[in-house]
Length: 587
Image (cartoon, rainbow, N blue to C red; front, side, top):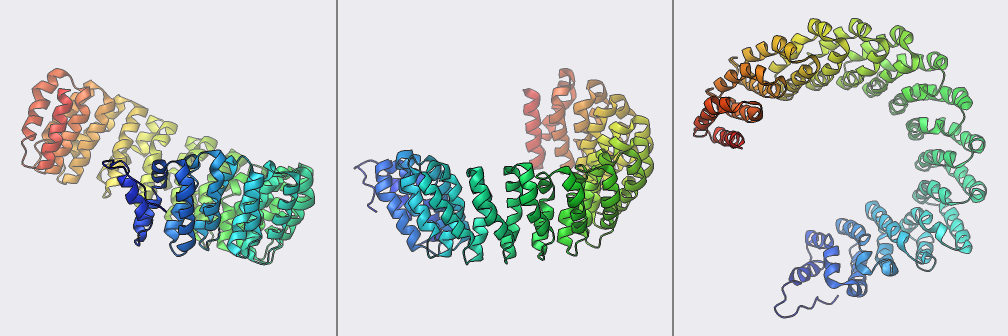
């Protein structure tokens, strides 16, 4: 590629010349850097030189650097962004050549990115018949597996924009890809089948797509059958309900019982979507027993995927059927040997409460909730805690308090700090549902205890929790139940607790109003004289937060003098935060 010519004294293009030179650099990272700037280079060169010089040069680079996957990946991405830089839609076809070269690469990431860029270019081509279809034919009938793999996702993009003769030819080529000897090619074709079917007419779907779909669903490679599950969903939505039931459901039933656990896993993962493609009678008559089998599968991965779908599936069937067929499986899963299965169940089991109603929740689900709240695996405990609101809205606060609250209080001291954190996040919601009196009896003291937790994240969350509780119960409640304990902690022998107390006062000060703030200010000013620098600069940060809440007279008489004294503190951090607070006070 010719060097960029620069006029004497014109420095504007000097950086561009450097970028172009770096495309030839022996250092891979320099080439990568330059490829990432292709739009800048093409803007400087202009559309004509980009088409005639830069794009052919990039094609040569792609052909020569088969081992530089990182550079080729970046090139495949950037080429898709050059449509405007080569002169717009009328000239976009010049980008097809280097992208076709990249589609032949063995590295899947490069190939997939090239396909993505080809689809972007194909959408804007004014004459796909003449420019894109020949490329598609070369890829689909190429000798290399990589080109045939790349061809499969390209058919749907231009199908509706070509002649009937080309459409027939394209369907034949795609059919050959579905029957290819190489499993990876068949897998790619199977992945693209649903997208192409969406572009075809009803007649072609029935006569050509469905036979291919049925054959791929019985492929001897499980990697192909796995992808066929997605097609069950796509085709089920495309076809009328009666046709979907007669043509797609038999394939679903077959895949449910597949010998490969990976295929069964995929069926479990798409289970509720598959149910949406068939009638309720079939869902209750055949899909319910199918889910039961998946929930009892020998492979833990399959049981985990199926467990995630329990609540959603139960909402599609009658309560009686859910209690009769699914609930026994749920009981077994709650004590499953795999912690991942129990955690998956814990994330959805609360969703069964609105489905089965209050009485069944109390009688049959509450024991399972309790078991999972006390599970050895912290993720199961976390998942149950995070869905408590779904249960309290069904069984009521009193029943929740009697049955689950003791376990929740026990979890407030869980050895896993993330579990304690999850409990803290749900305290405001529980407070809203329980009311002030009930909360004071059971949970109020615990909220103060968290301020002295050994983990900073818990102490920080506890501070925010007090603010939210004040917003729920009001300032008067905070003055009686929170402020005295926090003020007492300001004198604690451990400086970490004093820091937390100061932060709490700052957060509470933003919601309690000026009258209550007068009682907090002396403690913060006292902290400004703390022997530990961390406490002093925390006091500065607290004063900065509270400045907008304070009266001008208070600022001038007490706050500013304290901050001025701290602005000459021997500790640089204290001086910094004191100066910030003084600036806020002066504003």
